[in-house]
Image (cartoon, rainbow, N blue to C red; front, side, top):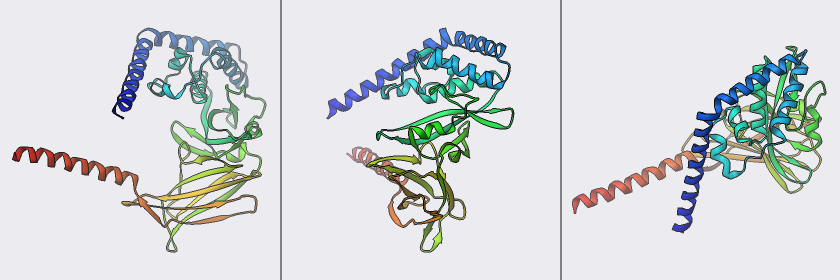
Length: 318
């Protein structure tokens, strides 16, 4: 067992050293060159574009040609390498990227060319073969009035309306737009042809419970995927209510879980629903007590601290 733990620690240490070294090389030798490259490219895109639609098209085509088609995907062992920086030049330098990195590079170039854009993300999806994943892309505001899809990973850009293309290949969870890290707008109905808006109500002993977090899993032909609860976070308001828009799909149900973690105990409640029948309001009794994970960690730390002090004091007495 000790050998296994030691091996894991050494592996993590080596990956950390490798990531730090790679970023040091980038910072000292490549960052300025990447910045110049991005600036020159943005100027070239502006010169050959006559309107905002063409700017978006040219950015997507540039990124597809220069980055998306040639890059490798980040793997689990690349976690430190991937997270050590979110600079677009860093990902281009590594020539590595997944959908999130493609979006970062696109949005950087959009900002350089004067476009207004934002990130769009789903917590997760299930494809029709039962595979589960997540995805992120961008929306661009054209002419100050219309948000359009820009996704270099799929070669999606205006003037074609690509909203429903995603639902042709995936069963989507809720879709939200983000500004920075802030979740700003529910976009689900724009991307899923058939949706239903429900009101989740958290209750205990006949009273509504405010500020409870919500987790939702999609269940399809024996496969499950969390579609609310990590990238997308929802919670009930001061009145214990939260509107949620979900897609209506054949052979699909949802598991709704409500969590109240404001005390030393975490209270939970859940229910399964099938949409398509004007479900309306869903009341969930949040009455199943479980130890609060944060409180449990704190208690363990206190116990460890007490044990250490007991050991130290016992040695002093000897």
